Image (cartoon, rainbow, N blue to C red; front, side, top):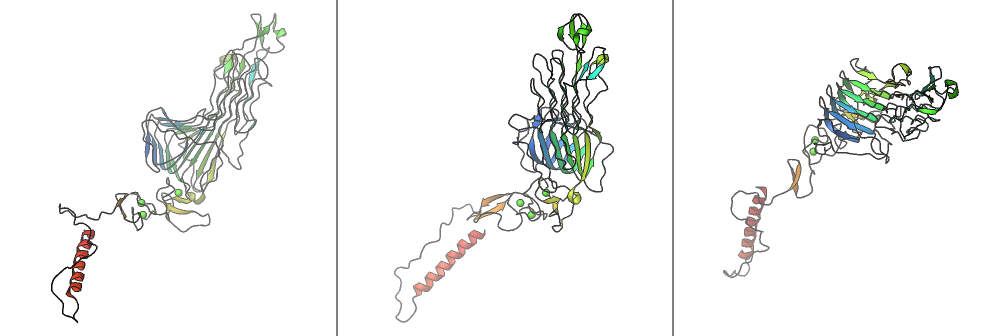
Length: 469
Ligand SMILES: [Ca+2]
Ligand SMILES: [Ca+2]
Ligand SMILES: [Ca+2]
């Protein structure tokens, strides 16, 4: 589940966050650029990058929701996000997971597809923005009928508060050996001033193959949230529900004619056989947060179809029956711009610096992926411009006393920076003592006193010159 509060930091309540290092990539510091290559990358939780790029042919998998609440969601906060053609970020089946012999798990009660009630009943589909699809069975006349014992989950999306969730799982089929429904889709959130999607971003519900002649339900699609001031690309965004598959049935009971089967299937080879189709998962939710003047690029393809019932079954299935489609919504970005790092200051990519406005936001965040960098932030010695005044490591008090900022790091001030090659002059004397010498006539100032003063001034001057060197 993801509780949204745009304009300030986005906060989530989907259990513990998990950070998994991308194979082959160094752990990224805040606001460093990352490029995804290859197909075995996994990640979840909140991640912050300067430019985040998914290369052509590369895939980033969102870790599946685990029993401890980790996984299931990936939020990329960046200054720019680029998903190249044939590159993808996928959270397919990363939401609520199916459980053997059980109703589908769900982030909200009753959202999961129900397990088939009686022996031989298929599972229902998972719900999200709409109800999950009901399972179907083939009756004594060979007709496909919705099956009361194979109910889909109940819708739990609220389009008013727009809280985003992972998708719910489909229900298990009632059969043997144990089986589970398809998992719901996860959550993918992309927040950046500029986003280009030429590849695929998906949070589809998963489908499980029929097992032992009976079919489980599909999982519902999950959530995709795109918050940006500049969106383009010709890619695909999908929160499609998972299909319920077709199953041929198994021998429910002995029979001599179909009349013996009580409407549950046909008598075939001395056994009542009931072909059945798992319910499809509903479509998920795609939410766009865009400037008030923006429109969705028509080149982007948005898929939120509900999963089919009886997919792959050929002539005897219930093809054409499908769970309800999901939906996509748009909302206006506060200030018509993003605050990807949640520091309260809008990105400089789409808003100029200005006074704090009525919304408490001001523009000019020169690194909107680092909450410690924005106008008014404290400049620190790190080689970056922290206060967005176009100057790196400028100003005083960047380092502790006795240290100076050099190349992004505080270094000790050196007391002898000379390059004479000789040994140090050593510490100044604690005192200078004059012994012997001439007598001073009574009544005159002692020459020794004046001489000592002059000598000390020379020594101090020499020390001072060395310090400045
Ligand atoms: Ca910001
Ligand atoms: Ca600065
Ligand atoms: Ca700095």
